[in-house]
Image (cartoon, rainbow, N blue to C red; front, side, top):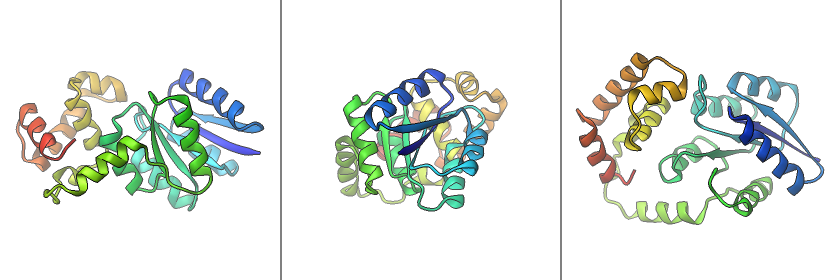
Length: 208
């Protein structure tokens, strides 16, 4: 029997994915966690075949959580399941040890395919991401300044590029507007930009 742990702050997402897993991998046990703290508690209680992790949750730094999970449980398979842009986030999370990245907007058959591939101890990369990585390999720009950003700074940069305001980002992560402002200021300094227009120009150069 396969055991899955779903880490996502949205109850509806967890319920839907739980139903999908129980049907596709019957018999299966599906456990749920709404944040990093409860996820680590459940991981300490029993072993799982696969962890499915969202990367944008209030009060949870997903990159730090992923690193902590893999430090405590080497070899544990983790699939990133997120609304965040695959072309922007997937490479970073694969680098930190995730076995795959699937968009929440992907067809059900792609989600099941990704899970099956990872359970077979292989890495899942979608056709779209494979194409993006292939194109990136031909880029002459190797010193990507976005690699200097922390996980939270990178998330905030990505959300600003989608058009979200500082106050909207603060509400999304359940943190203070001033905290987002501090991250934004540090991110701008590291990227050498002073406004959103310049941020977009740098992002275009590096295909973000």
